[in-house]
Image 1 (spheres, rainbow over the protein chains, first blue to last red):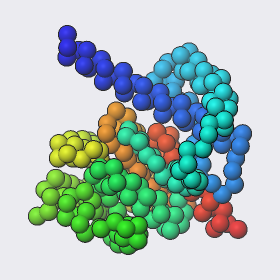
Image 2 (spheres, helix red, strand yellow):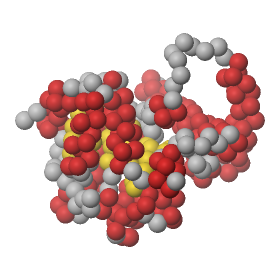
Image 3 (cartoon, chains in turn cyan, green):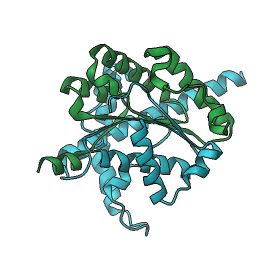
Image 4 (cartoon, rainbow over the protein chains, first blue to last red):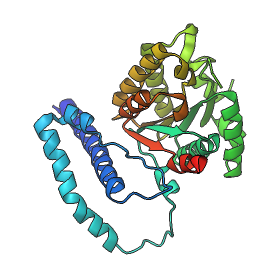
Length: 175
Length: 118
């Protein structure tokens, strides 16, 4: 049946995306554990083993983690040997600001400057990719974000008028 | 009315429509917004937010964690990205760990923390 085949394709694609995210989290966790770099935000503080075991089952989950970790040194080696692509140096902060569909990311911060920087990159990246960006923020964060986005060369009012950029209030804000 | 407003029926206060935090209603609105966004020709949907009120309310904290877990499952196969931010000096350690567990990925602004402590 074409419909069930289409549904099966979608499920397989979603499953692959999920496994790719798990693999990234496993190798990210292992990299940060073995090669911690001071002053660089760590996106993968914990190994998401609960989620992996929940989606794969205990035995297959453990095997999945073991397989990713076993292949990881070889992937690292290939990465080191790969010639530079000429795009120049990317800072770690730039790297962590890249997001993929399906991501649900928690950013823990202490300073508002850090939040503004990360939020602005997140929104700017989305607008550049033709995505609709909805910011549910209090008025102070909204104002600062608008200023930050303008400094990145984004025509904020134009994006708002187009509907690409939407500002909404979360409500019952404490600060 | 701008195009943006016509796409969103969230109301003025997204997380507390009708004065209360309603996980199911929020998820419905989120799904509706993602669909509308894609139907309008956008290549994806990004949302950012912070439910700061949760830091002072244990009951609301649990509701928020439940919401975050559900969103995490929902987003997995969608052309959507969620970026939730929380000030970690406003939440107990246990809650922070639960928040991290409720998200597919997390970023800790380690540099800023180190800078603030030095």
